Length: 390
Image 1 (cartoon, rainbow, N blue to C red):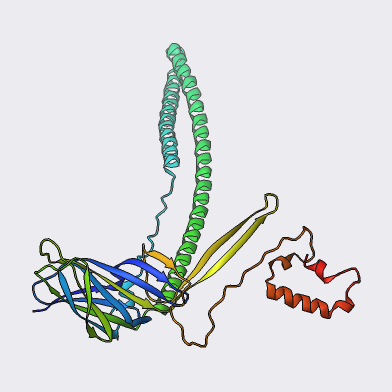
Image 2 (image 1 turned 180 degrees about the vertical axis):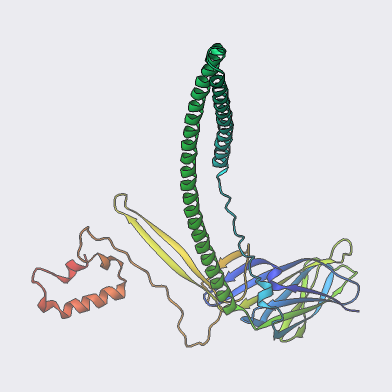
């Protein structure tokens, strides 16, 4: 009975990436594979169609034997939208009006106004009562209740004064309420404007985020492969140990040289590790130089950088990247060996009319000298060709 285990190439760890000028060699690892009794098939799916199928090499580490390796180009079974699912929409933030303190002030002033209104009603009731009692006294005559009338009059004066004070307090409280109302209205207007501004900022950010997601999706879709390679590795567990590190060529499957990689251990184990290496095209790098000179200290700094291009559907995370200048192939014996001509950089005096000439190569200098020789008759007699390049 055959046991199958399937791995996606994008889920495998990348050990190293060796980038040549027009291609790259990638080594990926599959660690801690548990084998079952009998034949085991390890399937690695999703290799980019830009790889060279004849460059695929599988090696193993553990007590097992690789019996067969097959490579097939099949339609990509994965769906782009499932692999790169859209991010959840940004949640709209709710803006709570910060008017709690203003509401408390308004409640406090309303409470005071109600209390003063109750006092106003009480004082008004006292004045009405005093007026009624004075009318009764007038009806009975001043000779019998003169003292009582005097007391009622004093109460009337006191009640009237208290009424005036209460009315003044009401007027003051109403002015304070109007002031709070105006301040609250201004605050609400400011809050509304701020809310509109925040909504506009949020909408702009959401639009920019959506635009960036569309750009990334468009770029990814350009490299999304319609067909991918699938590598099927057949492995047989071994119970007997062999010499450590032994490796010899075995059968040929799909035009590939397969290594029977058997490593002994002191005890038999069903856990092995595999590595797969392959060459892929559509990967390149080119050098970049930046030269800076300091005439005061007579020193110079040459910065050497590399520009990498990956036009495949592969992603290499946390990998060791090496750059090589080797072309890895020679198409014809008639082709000449590449040369690396020197780049001579010269220093010119400050204020020179031809400062850019300091960066000219030897061939450019020769071409310029020829051009100046042709124009020698039209130049000033005091100007020489040698002085131009000094």
